[in-house]
Length: 248
Image (cartoon, rainbow, N blue to C red):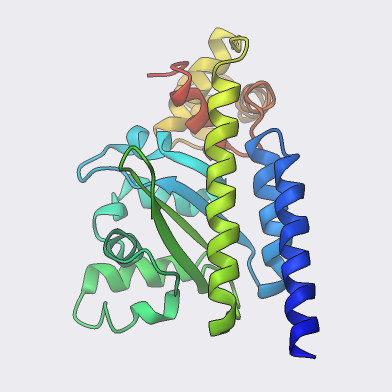
């Protein structure tokens, strides 16, 4: 019975990898990974090269590969530079093995800043999950984190989750390189400006104010930019625009 279960799980994983091979953009990759991991309670995920200490907001966003993370949390996280005190990042930098977020409780027992990051993340339903990291051939550390309100990961699942995350990151890097070398994307001046302000952390209402247009107008420019960049949310749109040099 155990052998049958193992074979079924292995076949399911191989089918997922083949399905991921057919993905042609980061939106598809993110969607497929989320769909697969939802059986464990995952609602959100992010994969990003870990920026150097002192990296500004745009540098942080420019490292993002996959993102289906709460937008408000992303904005707060980058604005307050939580990357410098995030215990998840600290653990990923020193230990590539997958770990559950609740394992960080001991790490932040005497770390008020780290405790605050975890508590504030929980406000956005990022309460339970897992994370891992891998080092690329050019010596960058890429972190993968996924979770939601509830998450279940048995010890026997760690290898499978590592395989899925590693393959998804590799596929995202490949797709990003392929799309960046394709025909240049043409953004209008207003779309580019809206993205510039989004990279500064401004929401649609704030973008509308500084551009002297309505909130609806700002949203229209952002949606047009996301469509041209093949992004499903503003974090991915800003990351892709930065990588392509469309915004500074």
